[in-house]
Length: 329
Ligand code: NAP
Image 1: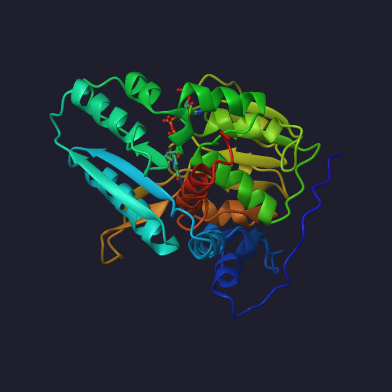
Image 2: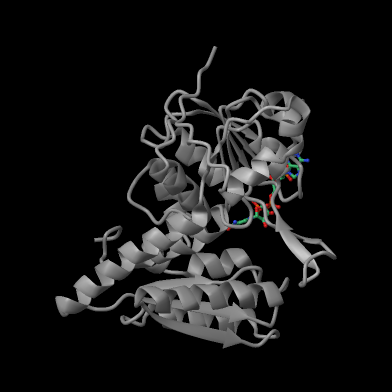
């Protein structure tokens, strides 16, 4: 039998999070005080990381060094992309980085975009460069990504950085997988020897996080199963996971019957679902049915406030590494 050794938090009946678990259908069914899972708080952790980065920026300033500088390229007017880029720029200000937002028209040619990337590659004042995805269909993401200088690729998307990450060489690890691993580390979740099931094999989340979880490192040293849309018996497989990382992009896909008692559940999904009870008319949910799964898990990330905020913190961290030439000497 595999035993997951996780800290249990003390029950506090006035805590809002604990109230939620107490009133969950699971608790009602068994008419008992539930064991509280650890809420893996990405919002709080990302603020801690940002404070650490801000403190380092202050040191750099006092040593007369160069302030880290991130450039973001945004093509077109997609609402979600504007929000994401806006949040990244705002976070740069928060930690004391310089930032440049380059906005290009929706109908910009591939050639013009590649020229802009080259220009930023050659600008010695800029340490990190991101090109917000998705790009218009007529632009080759491969061509644009490959054009970014690996030294400035703080998203960790270029073939050079992905390859280095796979080899466990110094590299910029892409923001979301890096954020997941950092959460596990900061919450001291034991991963060694555990079975980690990752649902979803995308290049930006599922595949890289499966590699990180299998590394001979802490966090890591898991036996990893990478599941996808062709995987057979997914519910049974998911139920064998000590650590379940869910990144498939389907709201509420993972239900309590797919989760082992005491599992650690990391929900990467993020979706807007209609909710007339909210002023905005919608609420955010993940790929996991939070309430019922939380009642079985030993630790779980909420949506919002779990993996999401860690993504920006990781990007800032990579930009700091770039400015300090910690990856490419
Ligand atoms: P993606 O590129 O759409 O990939 C989805 C993956 O899930 C694919 O590998 C797909 O399998 C698999 N899948 C789809 N349906 C499945 C099913 N029924 N059973 C098993 N596997 C299935 O998604 P992504 O970009 O990784 O994003 C996943 C989710 O994470 C989305 O909700 C996205 O919004 C969210 N996300 C959040 C952050 C953050 O910062 N919090 C960052 C990135 C993404 P196939 O390969 O076989 O098609």
